[in-house]
Length: 367
Ligand code: SF4
Image (cartoon, rainbow, N blue to C red):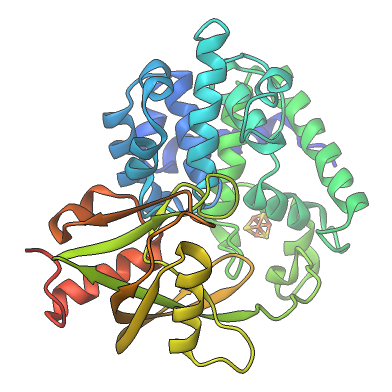
């Protein structure tokens, strides 16, 4: 499906009138656009803004980011989740500085950097450098699927190829009509976020309503795009220990590679079959750190959802009773004064545990 120049102009002027103010829309600095696109990969715009401001304040240039230790980068990212993004940003900044210190200008070159895939490279190349490459994120795919009346499962390769070729056609027409590639991409992304939403479509105010097949043919446009039923998300119980010694608390660092890599946490692990939570905590600390603990009161249980599974984190008061600490599975371990815990980057669930324990005075952490 081709869009006429009048429809494209309508879409782009709708964007000019309705786009939300965002700090990364006020800059042409490719580094800042890159940081914003990485933050936006898994996180909603409203959530991203404070993290973006904090990150740019701590690391205003690619040089500053490349020079920083990973711990500092993870601390600046703390709370935003999907920490592989921060580790990859750091790695890519080092790659850039090792070359000429400038972000590559094409999507093909950008894709060679850590953490930059087809979507992010297209977004950066089109917005920062004017490359005529369409962006196909979830918002854009939804808009195109509805406008074209695509009924195939969005997860199928052929459907994705169809949507991409429609997007490429729209991009060619937009460039021919004199619009900047980034403008078209941002207009479609914003339309998907504000008007053509997953569970609600505000068709009456949509700049594409005259050409939209879903609007003309379906009673409920939100049935598109079609997705296969999701498998049930698994749940795991995790036993963790607040181990105290001489007024300090034991924290461990996860290995750099893998989920939540490089972050600090209260030691513990997954509950095994036919095991009590207390047994789990004792076993985990022996396996991870070669120490014995006496497991006391259950202090708190916190639920948290990751993309592919959910956990309940059960934290127990523990006393170190024996064994010399060895790093068997952890990358590092420290006995930290409670007041210093704020200096370490924790995963969300551990941070919530810490905050709740402090707020409830069940345990005086900040002394
Ligand atoms: S007319 Fe409705 S369904 Fe079609 S693109 Fe606009 S908001 Fe989405």
